[in-house]
Figure 1 (tube, helix red, strand yellow):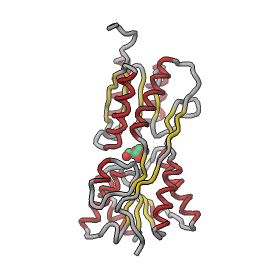
Figure 2 (cartoon, protein in one colour):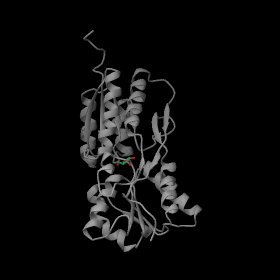
Figure 3 (cartoon, protein in one colour):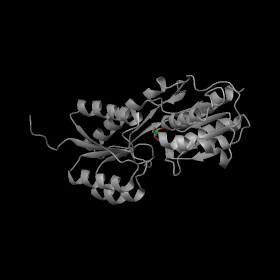
Figure 4 (cartoon, rainbow, N blue to C red):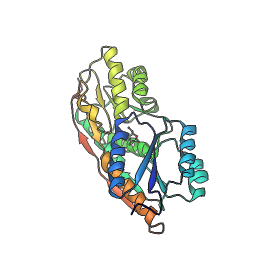
Length: 279
Ligand code: RIB
């Protein structure tokens, strides 16, 4: 049957196509879409709000059946004015749309705790964090988990221990000096791209990882295995996230009235070479 009732398309908006985390997410979206005979239209919003609402509008004009929005800069306004107004099913990644929304939840609280416990076990107590300003909800939960596990060991993070910088390789690289100013023995980068940028910055200054400073990332992207030293990180099941988000959205497209569905996914720790004992 070549004629379908709808075009069977979903729109997918991610913040940054250059981050392997999102390539893996899309891999999951593609495979689940394919199984259910949907076609995803994928856009990278480049952390740009204008571009993002442009793509949203265009996707809606082209009558997509639903949307997956993994873009951090989506505003509540855009959600109300563009999505809700048009009655299009959508699913948000990295932010909680509220109890009436379908969602894929990653245990960021535990992820943050695992990160802190790992650094504490190596004896670190002077720790810096690099993360973006206006962090999405998942990142705030990640930080809260990290903080809480540190607090259990009587380690407190002050505001100046948290360096605000865009969540990209360049953002990490440019945060190097601010991190060093805090004289930490370890740095927790809120994602791997940030960690890679920091490692470059440390290398250029002759600072050795992990002998002089431990660097811990988050996401477990493929590059972690290929940089020197290999990057320790918290693994997120991102392909599964993409698959599950797609499943939930397509279920919603087929059944607008069913109760909200939430899929919870675990994280786990991957120790590699970029973290080590305090000297
Ligand atoms: O690297 C991308 C980051 O943005 C991930 O940590 C993910 O959780 C998202 O928030």
